[in-house]
Amino acid sequence: MSRFIQLHLLTAYPPANLNRDDQGSPKTAKMGGYDRLRVSSQCLKRTWRTSDLFQAAVGDHLGTRTKLLGLEIYNKLLGGGVKEKDAKEWTKAIAGIFGALKKADKNDPLAELEIEQLVHVSPAERVALDALIAKLVAEQRAPEKDELNLLRVSEQAVDIALFGRMLASSPAFNIEAACQVAHAISVHPVVIEDDYFTAVDDLNNGLDDMGAAHIGETRFAAGLFYAYICINRELLIKNLDGNVDLANRAIRALTEAAVKVAPEGKQNSFASRAYASFVLAEKGDQQPRSLSVAYLKPVGREADDFAVQAIAALKEQSSSFDEVYCACADSRYELNALPSQRQGTLAGLLDFVGQ
Image (tube, rainbow, N blue to C red):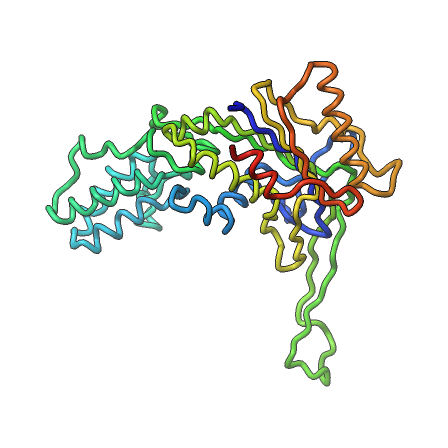
């Protein structure tokens, strides 16, 4: 069984704003001296793990990422007949196990029940939490110290096993991520464009005012993106308590989501859904490496067909690494959806990575 699975994807998006910065503009990065479009790894991971496709494949084994766990506990205690003051104190004791709580706020009496940072809670931890709450409600008493051992290293959720978890206040329960995701970048230079738009009032007959009811502006760009994913299969299996079948299901689900699911940013405005045009999957025990250097010199400056040139550059860089460092993978599988180069199938790709 190979230790590492590496995925190299090329996906073309039409005009879109998939992942915005603080100014509402598509995120960018400078690479090789040129501005490129960028979709952050955080955006990609959330897109994939919350997708219907991923949820359907491993839905019973997914965690909950939240800051509002304390409010949920508090409401359940209140609903069970616990007095408000007691419910608040008991909630702080329980929720504080999952992370430091916010400071009290006179304008928000429940602020101190919220966890300061997002915490990823596994299904097993939520089961233990619900059982404790039910017990406290039934016995109408505060939790004892030994009942607050709610965190788990074992019985982990698939998304926590893949993408990790950090609990600053309880490092013994940190989970090392088995999957690494790079920021996706366009393989060519880009210029961000502005879309000036207006909206018309349907009830305005134009007799008194011919002006628009709304005027706005949104930024967008189109691009062919290179994305890179590295999965440590051995660590994933370890994180999932040795459950090889679940690990393989997770890898298949993640791969299919990465190939087929687009980020949600501005989808209603641009309908920028896209499947990957090309995927190179690799398996082996060798030290992983990205092939992003293939695009240090942007494509599109010597050829009109960006996709053909991008695929050729990716393959050439892979071959170059193999020649210089010896084989960087034991086996490979290619999926190519370009009409002129059609090769492989999604089923074949999933079988390759998922066994």
